[in-house]
Image 1 (cartoon, rainbow, N blue to C red):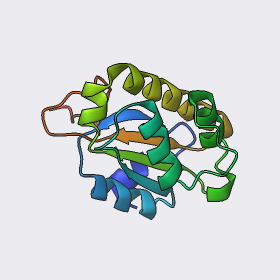
Image 2 (image 1 turned 90 degrees about the vertical axis):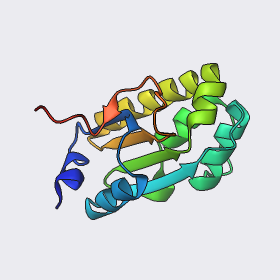
Image 3 (image 1 turned 60 degrees about the horizontal axis):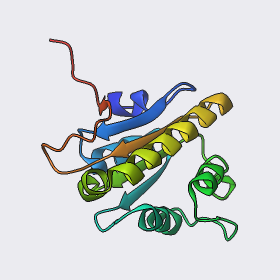
Image 4 (image 1 turned 135 degrees about the horizontal axis):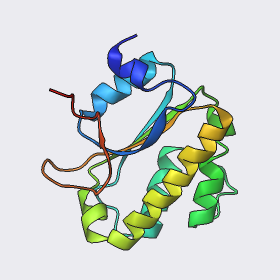
Length: 149
C-alpha cells in the first residue's frame, strides 16, 4: 500500500479537509486501501438544494432521503447501500459554492464533520476532501499536510 493509501485507513482516520493533491490521486489511493470513493462535481451548486441534490445523485441516495441537512446526516451515517470498510467523498470544483454561498457551505461542512465523527464511533474512516481552484482557501485544514522541513 502506498503512503497516501496508508494515511487513509485506520479507525481514527478521516476528517473534512481542503484537498491539496489531485482528486484522481486520492481516488486511486482510496481504492488501493479498499475504501469506497465518491467524486462529486459541485461547480454549478448555487446553495443548499443544489448541494443536496448533487450528493443525492452521485451517491444514489435512497428514496427516503428528506432533502434537508438532518436528512443528509442521516443518510451519510447509514450508507448501507454502499457497504465498505470506509468512505472518501471528494467535492470537486468547490470554489463557487464555498466562496459564493458561504453560509450553506459552512453548514454543509459542519454536517459532514458530524458524519466523520459518527463513523469514527463505528471505527471506520470517513474523509471529505474539498477541491477548488488553486489559490482559493476554503478555510479548512489542508490535506495532505505540509511535510516538516
